[in-house]
Amino acid sequence: MTGATVWLTGLPSAGKTTIAHALAERLRGEGRRVEVLDGDEIREFLSAGLGFTRTDRYTNVQRIGFVAELLASNGVTALVPVIAPYADSREAVRVRHQAEGTAYLEVHVATPVEVCSERDVKGLYAKQAAGEISGLTGVDDPYEAPESPDLRIESHTQTVQESAAALHGLLVERGLV
Image (tube, rainbow, N blue to C red; front, top):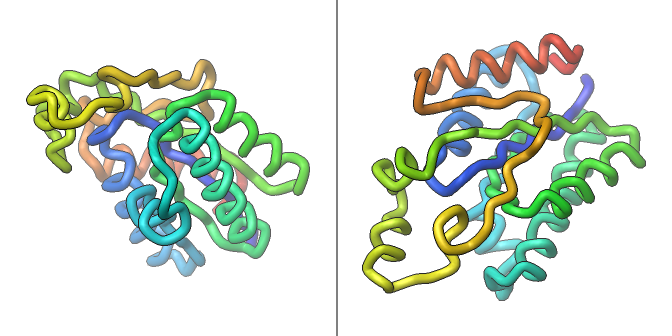
């Protein structure tokens, strides 16, 4: 089986992880080997000790990219719902995949910050508004949206299943499922 890395980038509460899990369920149902590399879990276990400076975020993205490429090069579809706010860190992951001959797709879950702050899955927007935290991506810390992603999903205009289906369609189109 051909593996691939599918990086879902977007703001906090954009729907990245929800879409990734919906797609993973579908792919597993089709007999595919799939792993979801959740950003929060990675930070807890693989990148513990890293903060949220630009350098630490870059390091975190490179670590995740390394693991994703390792999985993908061994026939696993690695779904990576991780903010990865800086274009240069995402590009470095893409280049690593290209150098290894491993498929890599970048998907922008393009949910407006206003919608994300209403969803506020982890309460981050409320904490930022209350002055309890700073450095929230897309609010008081930069988010560099992909200029030409392989797919742009506007999760606020469609259901989770429709978003996952659009992503599945891209995998089919690219010969990755």
